[in-house]
Length: 475
Image (tube, rainbow, N blue to C red):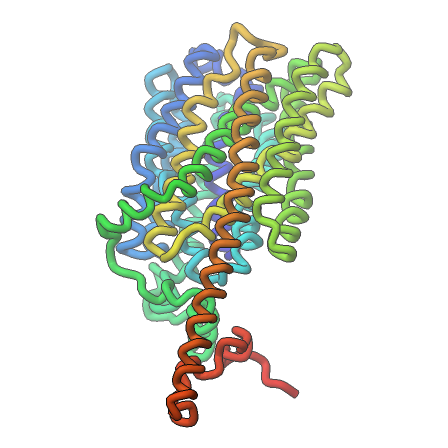
């Protein structure tokens, strides 16, 4: 769990440091306009989208230990070489390459988590995984505040050192994953230390038993995903609803995250100070995210927490649209902090909710790829929401965000009611099945066979804990 979170932290550092570079005259130094910069951000998302599912298929075949480690080395290297871009062509090329090398890491990490933990534990672990993203977003802005002051060291710009240092950290983190990240509980060895078992036999038995008792389908993993799994996943309309919710949430959020330091700077704050101020809401979102994750897991409120998160995210853009017209720096800054605090956590909660609509590990792997593809398609259109002819107040941009999020919120509410209906139908099916079984037992007893035939084995009232061979014994 901590290893995957570290990987996500590095990914966010490398993906998001471009937003911090904007306050250090990055566009002027490289020679790109704001609209050209937006195209580069679109190319990043396009690279991720094009290679998302192929990357996940490779991971499914070779294992997460090998593939996720390689990815960290690749996108860490590309991120480092971003420091040498000097024109529009090199800017677009490096953003596209960064997208290709990052593609599949997030859905791969999510799928890996789903194989190690039970369904009840999913939301909390997904949120912990996204903690790497959240902490990366927040800390990158504070780190940038310090690193960007290196402008002039070696006759280089501050943003040059930002890319070099953060890229080098990612490559070093790849070494850590290569030494410590196992492929699965069936192959508990890391890539760089294949002769060292990370878990002993007893620990492996406990890990495997608890997961398979929760979902026996997790023990039926194949070496590759077949065509039937694609048909099953792509024809599941509930998965597509979750993908559209992701599209609605992440487009506005990605756009706002890119320009939040610049928006804060437009309020009258000094350039590099704006990076530090833009981290406040991102740090606040961490305890808020954990609180919502706890409610989602503890009280099984998956849809309710997603709806609440989308509602507060939407309210943030309403605040920004209104407050930027008032001309009061403190009030405008409050709108930024609110939006950052409530702008991201509904996405991982939506993923946890979506995973409950999957029947097996193949469908779950494809669903993870689909929803992360949706998140990055959102980045393609989101990159053009804030344009140069709309700054500094971005009236049109904030209005677009309000409309798009309202669509996602409406779909989440519809899916909430569908979930209730679907659960009731499942309960009715189970009750009918039990009624038929009870009828069969009565027939058997009337035929004089009741003493020798026990079709239900008396397990229909047994709790999962009582069936668990590693459960704590009764005192």
